[in-house]
Image (cartoon, rainbow, N blue to C red):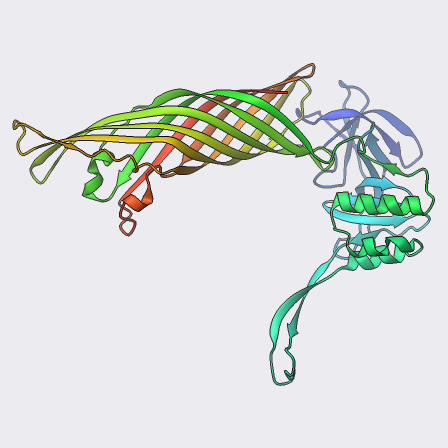
Length: 415
């Protein structure tokens, strides 16, 4: 046991610690204890108290009210894992108990001290066709899965014959294993089994609306002289609003702090520029304008930190702009001398802008929880790739490239 100062974002929640000597401590337990290492349990009796860290040798179990529970287990039969005392998350307790340790599942039958690992391996072998002589042919290299977990579960659950078909088809996933072990315990007459985190759903979706202010720049680079009007252009920096719908999807039962954020936004913007240059003694002046409107679809992985009223988050993902309006106007004025009358050339091309634009984005922000209301504030950076239609340019010489860079400030409200 050792102590250390409390660090911000440690996420302490009401819980308990059962010491090896038999005492039970009620207080606050770090929800992040053991997530990565599985070897510590952080505890303090009050918000102002000093944090105490216990090892699996000092603690029998610890957990949270109506939530997760951890047991101290010695993994001396864990195959690929080193023999050590660790905290394993207890998913289900009963005649057969189910555990999770760093993404690997284990089971233990009541009155049996051994903890069994559930896993599979892939085995390579050579497959021979009909009539092929293995001694004369190398055959075809193939891979087959060896389901060691099926063997373990069949052995432990052989007294419940009706489950044998389900055991053969069980997936090494938490939801599938919880359902199987739960059914076996009922079959074994266990009326006191406990499923931890049962009140938390496997899947949760929260929808909302969002609005933002965006600051976007449009940039071109060109290798060919045919696109010098774009290369030399300094397009205006556009500030414009956007509006949209959002849906945040996560699994509170599996990973509470990680979610998938999906968004649909609508916006309009206009970029204008003039450029002038001289090429082989001829003067060129250009007026250009892009009038664009888009429906943007975004998908982001979002990680939420601890916090009750203020809850920070970070996210990273990608987006796709589906342009609804893609109008490109280009007026070029050509003069043979600096004082001669220019010849006007209309080079409008409504198909120059691509129908879609891909891009990457990242951002950081915070949720604000007020009673049952949830508001988000976020700053985001977006980098969009080419907006031009590639079929209209010389792809062999990579004649022209473009990108958009956006800084956005968003506010969202979740129902």
